[in-house]
Length: 249
Length: 165
Image (tube, rainbow over all chains, first blue to last red; front, side):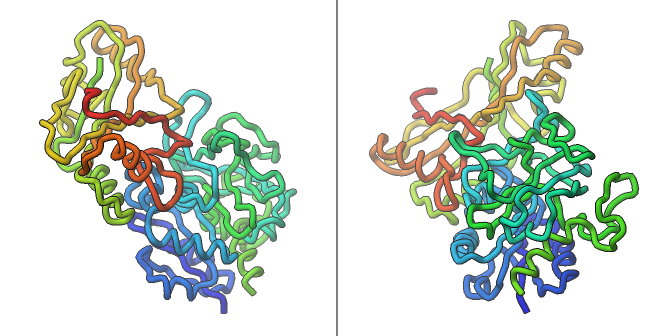
């Protein structure tokens, strides 16, 4: 059976929910420390960097974690085509390390003003889902509820760069699926309303919302409208982990 | 007016950055790293009452401040001090702080900005080559192998020698 490593940094706090979402799809998962040896690291088939506040967000969110020797191992795994998912702080670590290149995660903003830390449910749509191992089972027709929980979630591109229009992305939208750039539909001022994006090869995905917190219907509060999968026991973002399982099988 | 604030006790951010640079990234020239938060405030009135009687700009229980300048130690042989100014490209205007100061202390603040000032002490003899090395190995974070203090996508920076102060 394929094995998924959920990598716990000092300050991670979403590793157990992420493991539960992985196990629910029938994958074998294990929480491992960020100090894992390279020989043990290489025994896994996929890697997830969970949410939290690695190193207490010192210097910048994800900055210190992005300098660990583990990131070199992840870079080699990425080059070898192994799937890597970064969620929230994991997304910030992937951005800081350059594994998803030419992006940085800025502070949440509404126009010229900072809006601080946001903990809320938002709606997203996926575009080109077939282009990434973590999104391949999604339908681009669906408007999907998912929670966010961050202070620095604004995707900012380096000068002269933008996202790959043919690649898989999640975009913040309103309840009807319209991509609206204004707050609060775009809760952090992200370029192109981006909530998540992958690398060119399609094996790495970085997303700020928390799929592990929308993987079971019981996690979704009644007040969240437009739950496209309300008839199922599975939450809409179980598809992230099911997509991974399909690739690893 | 420049207000330099600094934690009275251990600055865990600076300590973590120093450890990451020395032990994870192997920057052997780094001797010490410390950090100030600097408020640049444009106003005509004295700021001491705001600094000492409100918590708008600093927490006086935890942070010390100095106005206009910071103490710089005497030069030592084979040691060079650099200062790195790091400001976010998306600067905040701190309109809420200006409004609080106007309401509570009765004077106008024309503009407020804030940046981080890192004091970087390195060992070596040639100041020019050290400055290049500091910029490459300590300052600019371009990937997972080098640099930490500045993300060039998010931040603007200025690296200066101690003589600038």
